[in-house]
Image 1 (tube, one colour):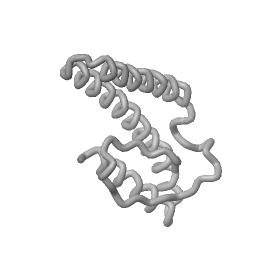
Image 2 (cartoon, one colour):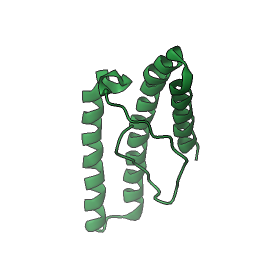
Image 3 (cartoon, one colour):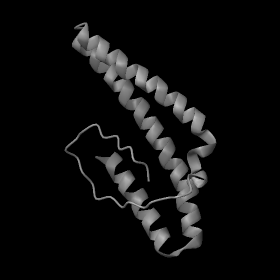
Length: 117
C-alpha cells in the first residue's frame, strides 16, 4: 500500500487495512505509470496556480472554479487507480483466494466508501 495518503479533509477517517507489498511490479497501474505521473504534474501546477490566485487576491468564484477543476482532476486519477486495482490486484487475489482475497476486497470496499462521502 502506498505511503502517500491524499485526503481533502483532514478530520475524515476510515478504517483501513494495511498490507505491505514487497513486489510493486504487479500493480495494475504500472502500465500507465507515466500517464499518472504526467497527470499528477499537471495537478501540482493547478495547485500552485490556486496558491498564486489567492496570493494575488483574485475573485473568490474564480478560485472556487479552479478548486473544482483540481478536485475533478484528482478524482479522475483516483478512479483510474481504483479501476486498475480492481482489474488487477483484486482479480489476482480473488483467483488465489484465502485471506489475501478478503483483504483486497475489504481495501477496495473501503476505498469506494471514501469516495461515497
